[in-house]
Amino acid sequence: MRTIRNLIITLTLIASLSFALVGCGLNNERMLVDENRLTVGVFAAIPPFIYLDAGGNVVGIEAEIAAEFASDLGVEVYFRNFTDFGAMLLAAQNGTIDVAMSTITVRLARLRQMNFTNPYFNAGMQVGAPIGCTVINESMTREQIIAALNVPGTRIGVHTNTTAQFFVEDYLPNATMVPFTNDVTTLEGMRSGNIDFMIADNVNLDRLNRVATTQGVMQQIDVRLSYDQFGYALRKGNYELLFALNTTLARISQDGTLRNIFESRDLLGGIYVA
Image 1 (tube, rainbow, N blue to C red):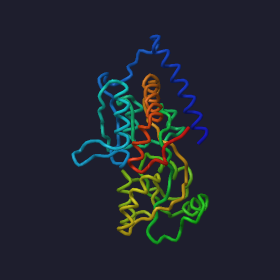
Image 2: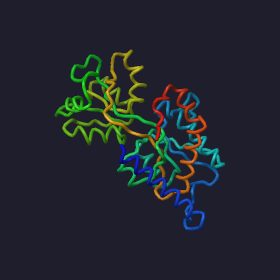
Image 3: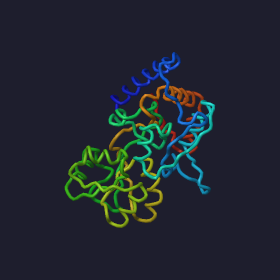
Image 4: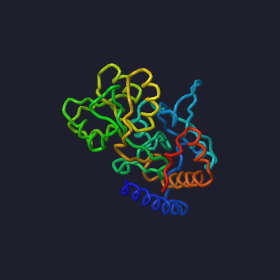
């Protein structure tokens, strides 16, 4: 975690220098895909961070922060909703969108392909287990839970192309990973008996658990398996936009806007503090 934090700080310093060079005319690439609007890629199926309301409008924490970005840039915000999380990240990497904003964990592998803003939220992987599960429980340590899951024949559901998938690949090589298109379909996989456990970040599991427990499907094992930070992803080399987004994040952190956004969703404890 410290390595990633130091990397982000280093990249921010590079961004500041590059922003100055842009002012000297040394970078001719456009900051925005469309100069009149901020094009934001989202995977709008992660409430309360980003989702569609009854009218089909993109709403949530990320949408409110995106509005702050656009306001400071003096442009409108335009949301492009992706049905595949990986496709959204690829669009950010290729620069067909300006920025991807959907609870994206800052990872070293991703930093090699994209730039990331400073972190804005702390999260971490947890396990969703069937009601009445005796294999793991909340009295166990992180290491004990990993050992109990990392056995041949254990089927673990994940939302593909997310940190949950990478966690299983990194820490549970002996288990069988079963990919799903989102966390809701992963939960349905548990309901139908196609998986034994699911792994997702604590916020998503908490949301699912509020519904799933009443239906007798899933219980959230409240033991943090990883400590992750969310950031916003954009095309590598677009340091002018990176500088602008980080400037806005700093402003809304200092003036209380970010606190109000998260407090209204009862997620105040997750705000990233440098």
